[in-house]
Amino acid sequence: MKTRRSERLIDATNYLLSNPHTLIPLTYFSKRYESAKSSISEDLGIVKKTFLKRGVGFLETLPGAGGGVIFTPAINKEVASEFIDEMVETVSDPKRLLPGGYVYLSDILGSPETLRKIGLIIATQYANDKVDAVMTVATKGIPIAQSVASCLNVPFVIVRRDSKITEGSTVSVNYVSGSSNRIEKMELSKRSLPEHSRVLVVDDFMKGGGTVSGMHGMIKEFNSELVGVTVFAESPQKVKTSNLKTTSLIKVKKIDTEKQELQVEKGTYLEDVSPDNFS
Amino acid sequence: MKTRRSERLIDATNYLLSNPHTLIPLTYFSKRYESAKSSISEDLGIVKKTFLKRGVGFLETLPGAGGGVIFTPAINKEVASEFIDEMVETVSDPKRLLPGGYVYLSDILGSPETLRKIGLIIATQYANDKVDAVMTVATKGIPIAQSVASCLNVPFVIVRRDSKITEGSTVSVNYVSGSSNRIEKMELSKRSLPEHSRVLVVDDFMKGGGTVSGMHGMIKEFNSELVGVTVFAESPQKVKTSNLKTTSLIKVKKIDTEKQELQVEKGTYLEDVSPDNFS
Image 1 (cartoon, chains in turn cyan, green):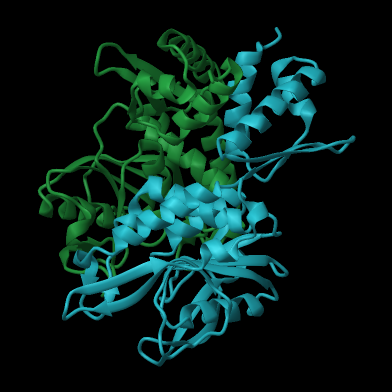
Image 2 (cartoon, rainbow over the protein chains, first blue to last red):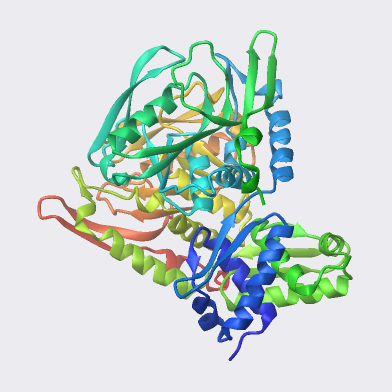
């Protein structure tokens, strides 16, 4: 039995949202709904307009035999800007100050709603790049990597500072930890990343850049290529251990544990992202 | 200007999917679409039917002044069963065997599509329970916790085996690690979990149950309550360090590194979940 338009629109919306960055042939929908391709085309036209109007993302139609539609999640620039302002305010709370000049972020990085936004924001930046995998370092970068990977529909890989026996053979690299100025080691399971991958690096907090630099080294060890680096927060340091171009959502400018002062401002995100990428 | 039904259906679908387990007043939609409540009610009726038919979840209407709709994501039992069969087959691959009787799962736990399904499957089990937070232990449990928390729309908290300076004050508990029969220590940041929370514990792999038991102890330290324990895979051990009722998606029955044998079967999930919970 033919499926009614109203049902088709609801189901297709759900399907597209769950399958971003994937080419879906029109025949898939026409079979699923036992409806003519012309009706499906009309449906998708309505979905496309609504997604654009509501800032959900782009629905692109590729014509021809191998054609179909691809949904690219993309945030609206205003929504992204509002969210970043909100994060600046939230992180500015001096109660977040921890001894040693650290900032408590675990609540932010444990909120699914916030993570969904962070993922969409970062995925928007790389929406038009070819990305094969998202890389981060354990532990706090993981939720961000997962959120971004979910929007880009690619796997994420986790580099570890501690060696684990549950990963099989690993590749290890050394890196300079900016905060302690010591040589540290990080490892990645050999089978977790195929060679010649294009890798996007994300993390929660960047100080000197040593960890990010280490991940760059790791990517080279896998004969792979770095697409870009985006972190939730960066804290500009005198001693820089990396010259990699890095995008940040927010910047922690000043941390004074004694005076209980914490100064936070917008990061480079809104300048770094191409205006065409926003929905 | 009034929004057309087709656009309303698409946007409401997206909105409901992004805001599960949340009471949304009908007035929210009638303002958003500048449409009469009666039209909105009709829309939501269509969404409800389609979500049920397509196995997306339940859309419940609460009548009255404080009423509205709540979307509860829930997987279809057949789809869950198929997915579990698929996982049994995937994990049975002897190439996954690691020295020491470990099984390589990082690719599975790094695939957003797989994680979305695992999250939905576990969230379906607890769809009708009051859950305030999802808890796991770093590192590999994190993606599962995040996926479940996203479906339940609650925060997730990460217990750590290594002490970190970026978390502030912590509470620590000791537990018996079944594999090594040693006393180990795990920590949770004090401010990450409010007292009197109802906590769901999830993890990637359970051997003797020592870690899960440790998390139970941690929950008690926070004057909180355990709602349930669900793990992706369990491997029944002779020495059990926990008597907690645990649900598993798959069971690794036999690991023989020498003969390169790995025997995997369905876990207890399909028996443990109430049939009413499936969509």
